Image (tube, rainbow, N blue to C red; front, top):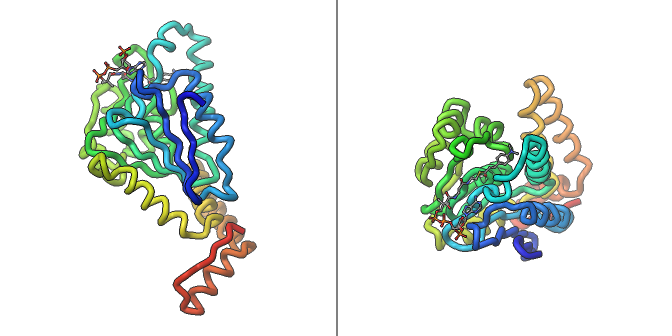
Length: 258
Ligand code: DAK
């Protein structure tokens, strides 16, 4: 692959978007390669995936403006669907994901970060949805996910004004969970991934699905989703292991992802 790297170290995977000439902007080839990586992520072995951008300046500077500039209406709808299907695949990946945002996360860059479960960023990170300044709406989920993460009022302000916000403001409004010096970002992401990976992977996976699915329905249905996830855990070996370890006062747990 030319623009997207995929590496697995133990049970932690890392996907790096690497198109330095365009600050890692998402053209069709980058999106296609992201899609291919997502198809490779194996939940039997990978317990957490970090998504980051190459370099110290940009996570992803948006969808490729040159490529988008020539689209007509039909092409715009198709382009939106192409990206949205991939971002939805990322959002629903049966493996927890951490966006390690190492610089500009604009437009499609902010949107891919919001398709991850958890966002952390470097202190030079800049977030925004600049689309209305380009004469378009956010098209890879920004109108939907930003409001769900930071609330409707803040999302509308960010989108209508096309203003960028810095890392500290992103932290203040809950768009990211933590801010680190650039040099420490990837280590922090790996540490967080390691903390997740130590827990029972099926329980983590089912928790992700219950949170995601539950937010789409009313509370009565959401609680049923939770009940089913909870029940499913009791059919796993890892539930036996987790509870035995507690009862035997054992610190070490040997979760098998089974
Ligand atoms: N697309 C293409 N090239 C880009 C790019 C982008 N988004 N961002 C940066 N580049 C390229 C620049 O053109 C430049 O290339 P050369 O001129 O060197 O060939 C190179 O990266 C370095 O950029 P700059 O020279 O501009 O670097 P600066 O440090 O001066 O500025 C910047 C960095 C990030 C502030 C600036 O590059 C910038 O403003 N970039 C554009 C950011 C942006 O507006 N991103 C949002 C794109 S809109 C939809 C589907 C999807 C979307 C919308 C609708 N539908 C289907 C409805 C998604 C939209 C977006 O993501």
